[in-house]
Image (cartoon, rainbow, N blue to C red; front, side):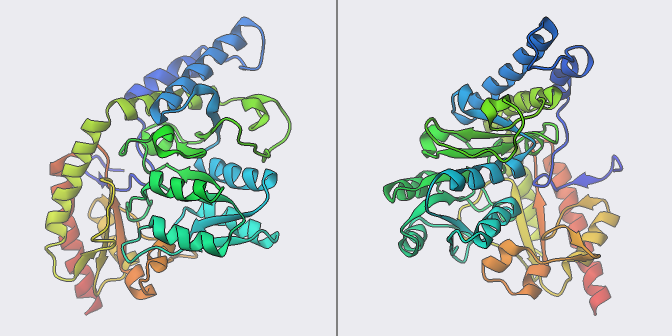
Length: 382
């Protein structure tokens, strides 16, 4: 990546914060023991893991004993859904807007004969409490409701506390994927009233390969992996101490700096959109519904999204569209299709996602590049 490039794909991953790297150094260089060992080297590493557990818990309003480290949010999502359904009779209610890890787990349950129902979103990509109530009516024996807090494609916000209340009144547990919320929204398992919640390190300027699943007291989960007593038997295997330390530091920074980060992200995104949406034929997907500050999902008439991405990249702006490339072709976003867009409009959509590290000047320059890229693509299509 050239120093002149502008990276606007922070919903996919974020750069490692220098302060996080510094926090990780002892675990990378000197504190090398296995946290499961009883000798001093092992217990020194154990203290680092437990300190990180406290930091993550503090960032999400949980108790440290409720936090279980995983290899990332994909594992946490699978652990929550498959683990609950392994221990609790009933079905799953989720939505077609969820992350692939949630949808993949839902599909696996369906293939095993577990009933799964999907809450339809409104035209803005919002899952409303009323829509959840109607869906729960179709699946009275619901064991778990799984809905994300902030959509990873559009930034659409779910009123987590409201949907949790609806689910609990029907006797269901609630799992929330809060990966895109941490660092941009006030994540609080107590205020939200959720039973399980997943977060990820690399979405908040921490390292890749580490996440956490918060599990409320009294919630029984079947493990995905077998072979050890780590993480209270829920996630066996030797702890990746440097990654866990990094996640703890990143989560603590994200929570402490939340107001400042939100303001910087909002200012950069709004400045970008003010220019980008002035281009004829450019509209925002999900316009009219509540959304978080990080995402801008734009639909560009008369343009192929894959071509636009390549031109943007050539001009020094990095963004994303839909799911990852498959056989050289970008598939339209399943989120946008679930919102009612046809494949042509979904394929003409680009996701820009921001961080507090993106300045207003960077966003303004990126918007001008976007204007030029759209013009080039339309000339090519003419």
